[in-house]
Length: 185
Image 1 (cartoon, rainbow, N blue to C red):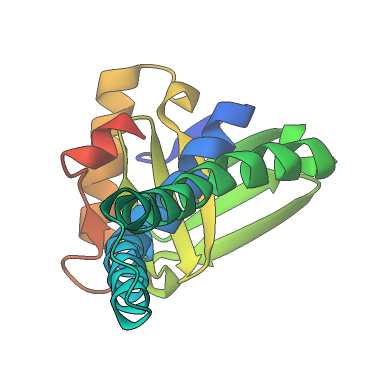
Image 2: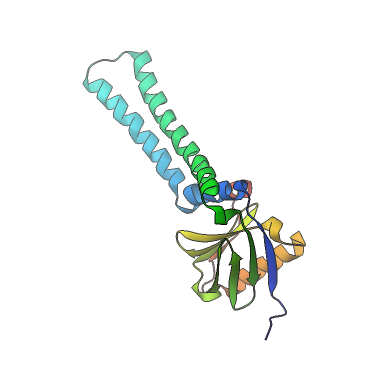
């Protein structure tokens, strides 16, 4: 028996969707941001300690090592997800194929990306909302990316999906609304 509340959304991912997901997953979901800051502090402290132990306290050289090396590391850490996402989008042809999602009170179905699958709501790990998409995590490291532009009537259908996700997930709190920084992703 068909579910009258079922949503069907469809579209084709764009490289920007994959880039945004990669940044979200790397920095927000996995908490890589705080790890990166701690790494920068540790690198700066290590450079400072090594300089002091070598008794070479040239202030210009010291500041160069303490500031530039961690800054270069941070730049690489920030740029890497961008290039990784672009490479993945170019390499994996199925990401560029149209997909259709059917969402009802009992399950989510995806037909596209070269395959099809379904997941019961009580088996979904979590649902995260960003400014441009819903990320349905099937496991801690695998997610379906459903851009909000896939929804026909943006406001009504997006709100219906939010309500459905919040009600159907196994535990309260598994649906996460966007935080301040998430709105940019």
